[in-house]
Length: 440
Ligand code: PMP
Image (cartoon, rainbow, N blue to C red):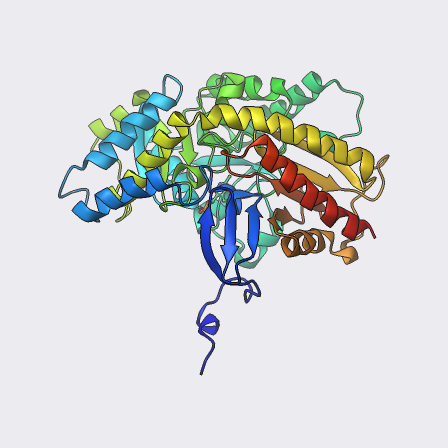
């Protein structure tokens, strides 16, 4: 008999055990082994697994209607979720469009920007500037914005080859600048690039407020954010924040943009928004952007499953749970606890060269030499080995072989926002044990 796994063609055949069930921050395999979900899957399961109140709300919708096409019916879940989302987002972001995932959200944001530019009589505005390194998704459009060469190479030249600027990789910089000066230096790269492309041709600038899969929780200096907003305003370039990973409370605010008091023109969200209870994402924009598009014939866009009542009822239950349980505040508080624990690791393991993050999106990175921040020898395969050592001990962590755009090893720790201080302690015991085994 053929092994059923052979019918699937993901990146590689999966050697892992079968998942059985989830409960809070834990996942259990079919042998009854328990794992701490230390990176919430891929920064997804923000409210933890199998929350009974959330399941009950989704079930209630399931019992009524699982699908009704959005052009055939209004639905309460979609309208209520839109209202709830707007209530949780900063002023100026008050129109919502639902999608089913992060790549869809990013591409939808760019298409909305484009249609807006057309309503403003600016048909030349089509260039989309993004950053290197970055990750914005795997569909062709989102991949074209992604600054991560190994993912792009097989598909080159893809669409048009979108211009990129360097993202701040501050911990690798060897200059004598202050943090503030360094943030401004990197922001000026955007101005240079806009001028190079011709401001009349530039539609948007897309950025992750805190780097995710490509850089590992890399936060720019504070000065970067405000200056980027100013430069976009100066040249009439729309600012898109890709908050697919950082949104929905992950960094200790509903949107990471709130840490710097920035209102992006369009925000893309997914992951923690459906929190694993439904494939769900959204773009959020101001009426200033959306209304002219609607007046000129509507947003020429929409996925079949966009705004379906089942996914929206899950999203609504997730946001209600986050609010009722004070999970965003908990993410901010527990983020500090976790960060202090990670900093302490730097004293114990000389190969941990950097620890960083915001809220419960944190990362640590391996180096071979603290004075030069050179990465470990790739032959050591550190990013896979530590993950395996942790997995064997019942802790799941997410790692990538990238650092500041070059090869290296970083590890993201981003547990569900429900985590307690005691559970962080439990996670650190396993992590230290895995690091000891790695160092041995
Ligand atoms: N943007 C960012 C910042 C992401 O982290 C991801 C997923 N890692 C995506 C977009 C793409 O999301 P999805 O995999 O749901 O398409």
